Length: 317
Picture 1 (cartoon, rainbow, N blue to C red):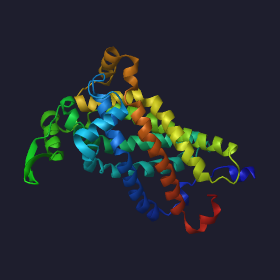
Picture 2: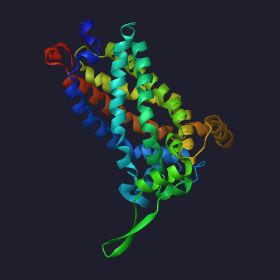
Picture 3: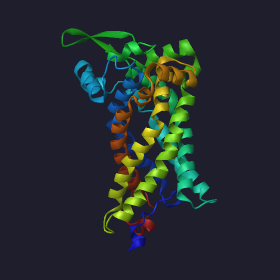
């Protein structure tokens, strides 16, 4: 009975890779679409000075919705979809590094820690240029005064009236390259690594830890997927809290065009004190909670659906 309650991890060699990647693209896209508004709100909160524009997560949500409509919550989303590439790079690196580390150690915490950090390194190398562009787009509208680059409004006829639209992505890319060159697309790269490598490295061990602890407390007939869905948000909240100060610094470096992570950190601390390090944390946890649930349920379901046929009956669901 005790053996049945242990959550068995589906490893890389157990998977049908063709199914894994086919289902994975759909899962990643769905997750990104669901949580993008919270990501946009988090970015605006982190970049604003004090509470100059928004007093908090919900205030920002309703102000953006009133002033810019639903489309305002999805500024920069189309360019952000290119992070699908980094998403696939992330899960592939995570699984392969876990497999490699398992040759030297059977400790699941160690495997998760090393694989999570390595996966984030690969993913951020792909994601940062996309983030730099999409964050500039996020700041257009109410928050455009907080960014160095502004898109050129184009007048189009709509319902007999001229309406301002933002043709955005190309304008932003051209401006970034003109001012900063190719390096401009990797502005904040170090800050991103310092944020997301620890976040990923912390998330996976805590996820497996919480899942195992919950499995010991839950009845033996409780589906493992429910326990994993509960463990995901707990791990996400833990990781978000630990890494949020660097996430605030990362957002400011990328949006404001700063060059020094240390100087940005000092400036933030001097201007806004300790509480400045918590800016956007509630939005981050709010966005990471459904993300974690959807990601965990989606990822574990993805791995279950991608199991090699001969292994399907060997995993407790």
